[in-house]
Image (cartoon, rainbow, N blue to C red; front, top):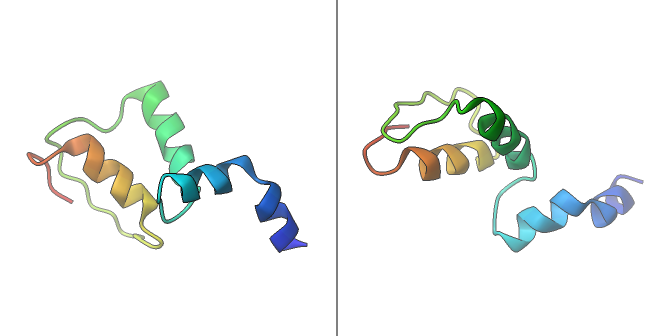
Amino acid sequence: MGLVKKVKDYYYHLAKEKNLSARSVFKLQEIDEKYHLIKKGMSILDMGASPGSWTEYALQKIGSEGNI
């Protein structure tokens, strides 16, 4: 049943299309777009970095001036 759900899941396919490690990145993106939490140049501590899609998103947002 789990496999069937993934095949039909829009965000699963979108994550694969964008070469992201997990679809959960879209949750962080939605929160960030609403509350503007992650800004260029920030330092971020990711204490649960598996599978890594949130880290990938944060790295893109903070740019080369920031630290993860």
